[in-house]
Length: 429
Image (cartoon, rainbow, N blue to C red):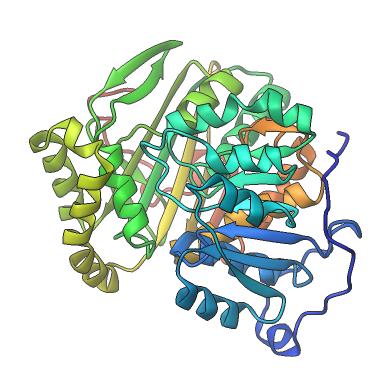
């Protein structure tokens, strides 16, 4: 697949990683092509948990990259720059201001948009600015409306010759690529047709991601769940349809509930699987009960109001942080595929720390773009124009750095703690 043409605005300069980083870092480093080796990468939300983790992972994977930490808090920015080292700098950026964005993007080669939450956002201001300034783009969006709004800019990105990926984080993101590989293997190796695809996610506490994931979770409770059953789009109440899913050793069996996530629609449309759903669960189990209670007791309009949700986040955040210290931040993703010949396979990814895993995942997508894997346009991770089929294996390998479990295309019994799976619950999808 022909690589896309990136518009590199920075002069080529040789940058060498510090000796201290080399001694302390066991991450497999990436040798980027000469034209992108010294690229400037702007990470928006770079002082937050997700953006900071991404900047850290990028600096370890590609020490020659010049990382620009974008945010609003100079003190936090300075602290992050001190952590990253000499190939980094801070830029004060207001993502809601067109002039501020375009000024920040004017001399960078790739922008990573990690300044969530994305729920209830009405515009794709960062993507529009990236197209206007001819800057490659990646976001970690986890909202269906935002993702498909971003997708509508495909034509403009093609005209500007700019590669862009939306929903390129851990889930959605890496989970999409896992699903795409399961479907590809089913069709090409087993000559069978996929019937049902199920995404299941588990995170202990807030996963160490703090207020952003808390706000995202609350906002998702205000959205009807879109799923697909035998090709038909259906709408369901959020945080219902509980399944008890076995995430294997190190995680075990966990209850997960339906949520409205963008990979459901994108996988249904791109991978052409007729039945698709996504579920999420957390720990301790009282958090699941609390989420279920909020869905039943609070009006959907309240949960879709970002200002009201922010007040809830400020109320619950101290408690969540305290519980995080006890619950830890383990994360697991299980993707199940069932096919016409009764063939069932899964992909499984588990990590001890979501705050590290999400950075590794997002950095893996950023590196793939810099390597030329992404064609001009706006793509979902499972589209071959977004991540070339031949580049998927390497992306998954980089994303799985430090994972306690990473399995692809295996029968469920090979990874489950108890091969006798419990009942499927009220929704068989």
